[in-house]
Length: 249
Image (cartoon, rainbow, N blue to C red):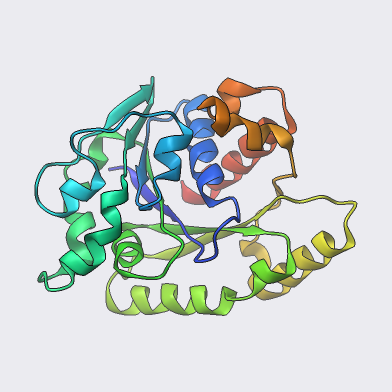
């Protein structure tokens, strides 16, 4: 059965979707078979990879109107796409019995086909995120190395702890990913020092450097390994993914 990992931060613009895409692509580079799930109503992961609107997205699956239908983006990398319709899912599912477990039940049908399933969570701590955490073995927190990005870390940890206690005993903090890092900036170094004090060894040793190729790749509808395989962004995500595999296996 594949290992399910959620990428979570309720603050937007921290590199969550970029990390989900490129960790998934790096896993494929390392010989793994990967499923990416776009659980964000903004559908940024789907758009970033240039995937056209599918008949059955994660929204239809959560609503019971269709099964999880993976879209093959390239060999070894499949996607469960999202759409704007997903923005109404939380209200529509609020009265469903066992609503926090819907995604876990859906994933049980497909996880045997993959080594890893990565869930790109929405930038909120609502029902969709609870479904992701209830389905996951590990949580990764991408964190931009800026002052405001650090605010709210305690809340994220609190939510993870509550889900572990009440809904998913297997859930573990997989690690914190420092993104958009520039060692020349005192603020970036200070923020990394702060998160090390808070999370200790849970902070990955590999920092994702601020790299223009990572920003350009979505515009070309590619992951960093297809767009610029020799860039610092590709190097960083490959090194980070090796760390993740060491922790998860």
